[in-house]
Length: 388
Image (cartoon, rainbow, N blue to C red; front, side, top):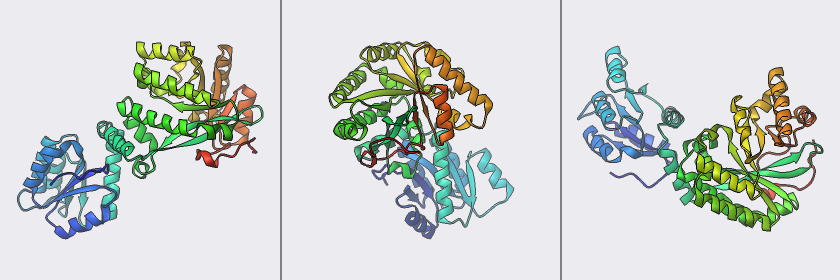
């Protein structure tokens, strides 16, 4: 048996109950790529050839050729990083202890179990695996296959001038509709951080933006400023930076200025080539922003780098400031420091008028958040001043 060509998570399930396997297969179709076996030894042989693509292993306690615990012990030696789940109708202490101590199972499920309950357990196990970093090699492959299928699009979230709430531009965000049925968008990007697939995805987003450039100008007006997030490892690549530079020039021909954002949490990977290329972009007039600034209160050292033009304040910090005097004072202090050194300050995550007016008083220049518009398709963007 071979793995079907799909980006669905692959689950190996071994059970001698053919009716259960058929029922599970029907219920999980479209959510998981289910590889099912009745014979444990045949399943182990298959696993030895395909372990790199398997996300979860599920085995019944009772099987004809090898019992579930011995099967999972061998599966543990063959694919130690793949989570193992035991199905059992026997809940006595001895087999359960052996399963946990020797087969290193992540979960024991008592039969009978509904297909819906099993689906929830599998989804949670795969999600936890990705968050823990065990899926770091799987997610780039999943995203790459999604790109092959053109499962990506862009939305834009408006940005406004703090003084009068007139739209000044927006942030372009990438969305992957089919993939987001199974993974959170943050989980997708976190799993691909510092991976070559991020370069590929960014290039695809830039191609979409070039096609939409006339519409950006129409919706946002002349001199529109649009920001997009860039992986810092991408900026370390000379060839990629040349492509970004050409993209920025092409967008300027349509009257659209591109700004680049780099997440504060990712800037711990800055190297000499990153600094060289960041300076190159800054000399060309490209504005680089530190995104999520203030999430790490020790990140002020980043402000010493002359190639940054400003900061985008962390949305969590903005969300807390009206109810927490310490966070409120911290935001005010950040703004003062940035203004003294000539940095622009943008606040994201603005959800109510009181917060917007407070940030305006502190000297924040631009605002972004649900108060001024959700991320939306470009054709849904209506020009003009935002009424709040």
